[in-house]
Each structure stands twice: as C-alpha cells, then as structure tokens.
Picture 1 (cartoon, rainbow over the protein chains, first blue to last red):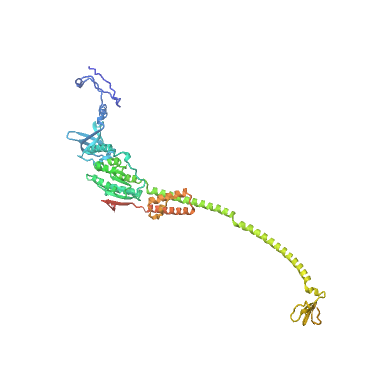
Picture 2 (cartoon, each protein chain N blue to C red):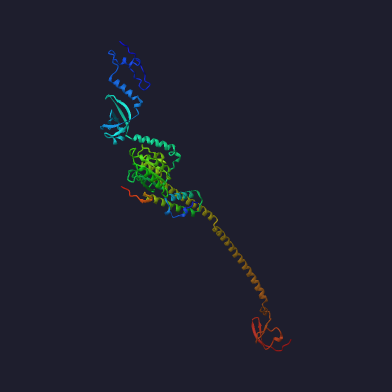
Length: 437
Length: 79
C-alpha cells in the first residue's frame, strides 16, 4: 500500500479549517492514478465548500466586469432577478439581489447587451457556480466612463475644479436664472421649491435642451445669455432630472464645463439624482443632489425666516420706543417736580404776606399821622381863633367899613359918607362928623 | 442718525432696502441720543417700513420669465 504523504497546509486567509488533501510532492501522473485503497476524505458538502472557497478567495473573481447578452430573465415574487449572461461560446448564471434590483430592473430585458459588475460565487445547494451582480449598465457606458475620467483628470489638472474659484452663494437672491428644459419635471420641481421658500425672487428661465448631441451648445448659449442680463442674476441653477449616464452626458461636455467655470453669476448644479456626479457638478460653485435641492440651496433664507426676523425687528422697534417714551415721561415728571419747587407761586404767596404786612403798617402809620394832624389842626385852630380880628370885638373894639364900597376904614381920610360899624354881636350904621386927624 | 434712504416714500423701497433702513432705525433708537421729536419721527418711519416689508412678504408671488434670445417674456407654466 502506498502511503500518501499528507501535507497539512494552512491558508493564511480566513479559512483555517481548510486542509489541502492532495500530495504536493508526488508527481502529477502518479497522483492522477486513483488509489482504490485510499479512504474517502470528502463529502459532497465539504468538496463543494472547498470549491466555493477556492473561487471566492480568488480576488480576480471578486471584482469583475463581464459583458454578455441577457437571456432566461426571470423575476420571481421574491424581488430577486435571475438571468443568464451569454455570448457565442459560453453562458454564465447571474443573480441580482432585490436591493440592487430596485435600481436596475427598469431597463433589463431579454437580448440586451450589458456589462455586469459583480463577483463569482457558488450556490452550494444547487451545485452551481454563479455570478452575483451588483451593477448593470448598457454596453458602451464603460467607454463613456473612461472618457469621463479622462476629461475630469484633464480639467482638474487645469485647475477648473479648484475650490478657490468657488464663489459664495448670496444669502438673499433677487434674481435667479435657471438653465434647464422648459418641459421637464426639473423646472416644475425647482419652481415649486422657490415658490414655497422665497416667492420674492424673480426667476428667469433660459430654456435649453438637456440631452442629446445638440444639448451642449444649447446649454452653453443659455448660460451665456443669462450672464448677459442686466442686472446679472444673483445665482444660476443648472439642472436636469435623473436619467442614465448617457442622458446626463451633456453635463460632462467640456464646453459646458468651461461655460460653468467662466459664468459671472455663481452656478448651482443639480443634475440627476443624489448618486449622479457630472463634471458640471465639480465645476459649479455648489453641487446639489437634485434640482429641488438646487433651488433650496439657492434660497438659504426663506420667506418664513424673513417674516420672523421682521416680527423680531418690529417688536424691538416698538419696545425701544416705549422705553424711550417712558424715559422721556420720567424726565418730564422730574422736571415738573423741579419746576414746582422753583415755582413763583411760593414767591407770590410770600410777597402777598409781605404786602399784607405793609398794608397793615401803612394803615397804622396813616392813623397815627391823621391823629397827629388832627391835633395840629386843633392847635392851629386855637391859634387862629386868637388871631381872629373879630375876636377882639368882644373886648370892645369895632370894625368900621364904608357903606358905599365896603372899604375898611383904618384912616380918618377914608371915613367918608356913611359908615358901618361892626361890634361883637352885630353892626349899625353911623354918619361921619367932625373928622380930625 | 441713519440716512433715512434720503426719505424716499416707503412704497418705493425694495424689501432689502426697506429692511436695511429698518435695522438702522432700530439701532439708532437703541444707541443714539436723539430728541423726542426725532425719535418719534424715526419710530413712525420704522413703523411704515415694517408695514412695507410685511406687505411685500404677504403679496410675494414668484415672477417667472423666459429668456428667448435677448427678450424676456412671462413664462406660461404647464400645469
């Protein structure tokens, strides 16, 4: 009996349970000869598992693009998709799990030439090796992608994507330019978003084709014409709804990329879905995942922001005015107090008192004076009486006047014609006789 | 004292200019010593500006135009 040398070989890879059972050192012919005496080393399961591990640890089989035509397409209720990829010489069973199938099932059909990315694995129950697909694209996209990478590298080297070229997006745009298809859902989505967020803005649509060979010059023209507007739009939205890489290809066109870079107004690019990147996305001042997002990024300040800011300012204004008014009122009442303190009323009152005082003194002085005068008058009257010429008549003197002309007779010569003699208790007439002097 | 936009009638002001003037007025009332008369005038102007801004916001309706060549025309939106 031939003793086969058994080599225990440990994989460095995560299969420590695996042992290689064939004799490495023996010649291949010798090994090909089945030994009838050898003991059974395998079960179907361990052998299949061995094969599976062989295939699935080969990195060359784990990241593969393979090209072929779709046939035997089957879409059971599970949501997973099964098909066979074939060419003239061979066929390959393929599985597309439900999660991946959601994105891809729309364009899969019998006979379609596709490029499928995925990895080789083994379905042990069925004893089949098969291809687990995760991405599928129409034939030709690979070429486009290569072109995309080449252009991207070239423009990047030229510095067109440098962040120092990026212009800020204004916080409060008045005028927003839009470059998109006038009939697409993208336009409707953007207008809806703008209407909801900031209906103050003026939107100017520069309609353009957004796919096909004629699209790039139209896109360039639209960007240019918006840049010739007076006043310049505050921001331009360059947008298109989702589609295949070919649909979006115009946004990878070099002339369009250069138009985006040289635009006077900052550009927000919202092309396709979140996962789609175009060269315009890199060239734009801001990249938005979708057209709606582009409109949102263009209006960082919304109408409701403005309303609440205005409300705040309004109440600030009113509160400030109320504060000012109450300060003025306080100042006024302080002044009033001061005014009252220095008021002439007090002066008037005290002056009044003084006046009363003076009046009293005046009255007293007056009375005093009057009494004095009365005394003086009485004295004078007495003296006057003593001087009264008629007073002496009482002592026997007489007052003689001429009857004719009432002249006082104090000289003999004056005594002519009839005279009147006044004595103390009356008068009588007399005739002048016997004058002597 | 803020230049009160050379005292244009508030109805002629855009939202931006009206709002900026309003901000200036509030700042002026807060920081400066002005006479009661001046303060009242500022306040009244401020009130008018608030009204103007609110009216602009209330009436705001997206204006959409289409550029064809050099010409701007109102855009007929497909529903």
